[in-house]
Image 1 (cartoon, rainbow, N blue to C red):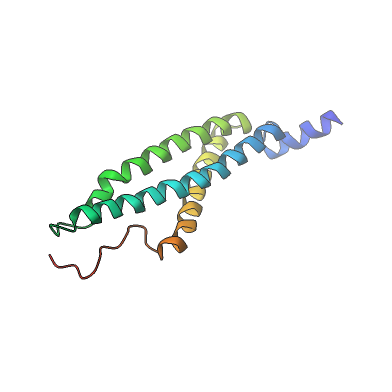
Image 2: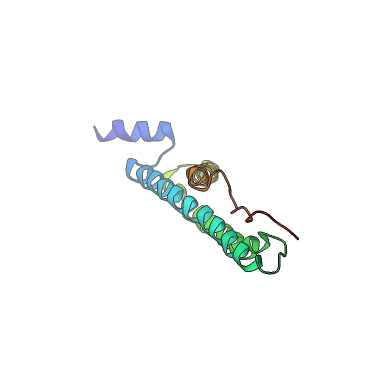
Length: 133
C-alpha cells in the first residue's frame, strides 16, 4: 500500500500529499493576501484624493507612492513563500518555479476580482466630481 502512493506521487510530480496540500493552502491564503493588497491600493488612492482635494493637484498620484510599494512587496513575499513550499512539494525545480508563478498570478487576479464588486469596478478610488483643475 505504501508503494502505490509513492508511484502515484512520482507520476504526478508531487513529493507527497502533505506538501502538495501545504502548497495549495499557501496559494489559498495568497488569494486573501491578494485581496488585501489590492484593497490597500484602493484605500491609498482615497487618501490621495482627500489630500489633493484642496489644491486640485493630480488625483491618484499618491496611490502610487502609498499603495504600490505595499502591493509590490506583498507580491514578492508571496512569491517567495509559494516558491519555498513549491520546492518542497514539487520534484522538479522548473516545475516548482512554474507552479509558484502561476499560483501567484492567479491568486492575485482572484483577489483583485473579488475586490471589484466592492469598489464598483474601480481599482483606484475615483476622484470626486466635478474635477476642476
